[in-house]
Image 1 (tube, helix red, strand yellow):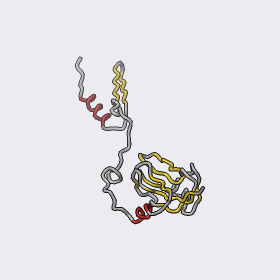
Image 2 (spheres, rainbow, N blue to C red; image 1 turned 90 degrees about the vertical axis):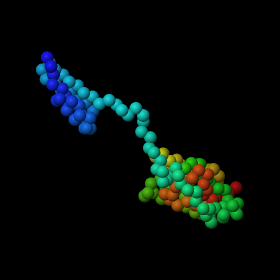
Image 3 (cartoon, rainbow, N blue to C red; image 1 turned 135 degrees about the vertical axis):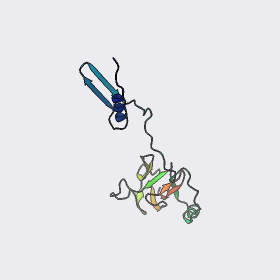
Image 4 (cartoon, rainbow, N blue to C red; image 1 turned 45 degrees about the vertical axis):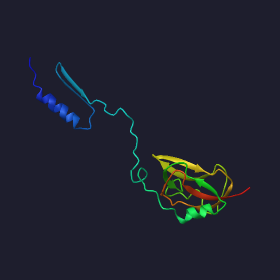
Amino acid sequence: MTMDLEPILALIKALDNSNLQKIKLTSGDFTLELEKANTYTQEYVPQIQEKNIAHQKPQEPQVKEEIISNTNYHIIKSPLVGTFYRSPSPEAPPFVEVGDIVSPGQTLCIIEALKVMNEIESDIKGKIENILVENGEIVEYGQPIFEISVIK
């Protein structure tokens, strides 16, 4: 008995070009079962957009950075590269404003890196003197983000 493979090859091609994962065809005593191989063996990891981080040119020193070196403020620096957010959501109020008194462990902002929201907390008791980054701005590792006057 010879079998015409053309319909089977057409079925394989149709499966390959569809969103289906499996086809089972039964006709009398004949059963044909086709299943796509799982080609995704590695978990998906989002890629950092090149424009955001990978090849960003160093920025020229800004006036704010000069002010930092001439003050006695406690500086909170970014512990990672990511996107700076002042509030937990676009509709929510900011975690802190200039003039607010903060305590150790109090959330100051969020830095998003690889779709993970990292809360940045105060490590001292003090008054927020300056917020050095705009909402939604990319921050670098070690970049100053807050100036705080220490309260004893």
